[in-house]
Length: 305
Image 1 (cartoon, helix red, strand yellow):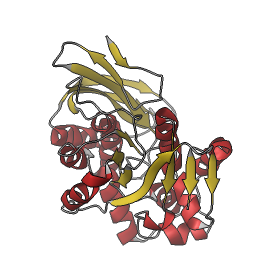
Image 2: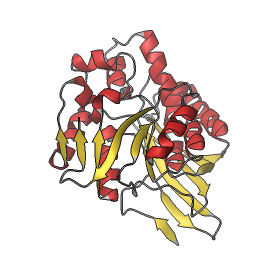
Image 3: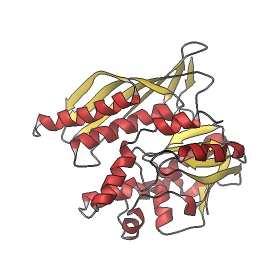
């Protein structure tokens, strides 16, 4: 029986096998976000695996998806696949082959199968008034990737962005399972605003986002103020405008729409669980923050303050 399909634009499909077991199925791949093939493989794999964690599940099996130009050295493809394989191994899953085609531009990702108990899975809907919104990774990877393509990113900023994008959401998800989670998603190409909108609409609630509370990667503010905003951020803003209200402007607003690669989890949890979860997340290397709250629907699904 299909438990989760396309109804709320959730992160993955979920199919119930028995009263104790459901299968999570997802697929994701994209073009390089860094010139280092090994790091690209790690980032793309972490991004694909993240959908399983966003459903409260555990990855079990992965298949490679790759496109590669004939004119490039196949050693580059080998490094991409090695990066992906290392992340799958870190996730505790098994990599069992895949499929590669010839294409003009490299692309890489995974098809991932995970397991979850049917009564313990997370969806991207179900937030309740009074819930707090917790974000488990800093924003700004899209802006920093744009700065890298422009050749102006500083080494320390690049390393911080890579660390963020290659970190599995496994660790934050494992800690969140100790608490009550009403709904969850991971932040990727639609940016924090886009994925929060999906949660708010699915829950039929309003999400109030505190712009000053957002964790941000080093350099993201500077580059955003320089105008190094990815084209996807403008598309995200245009798509969301009719359903949101913004009381802020400038670089913080830009980062709300910034397309993320292998971003963090956004969780809606009861207020009484927030302090405990934040205390547990503080032990991780990446900054987490309470970035908003859930209220009754007020005519707009998102309000930025």
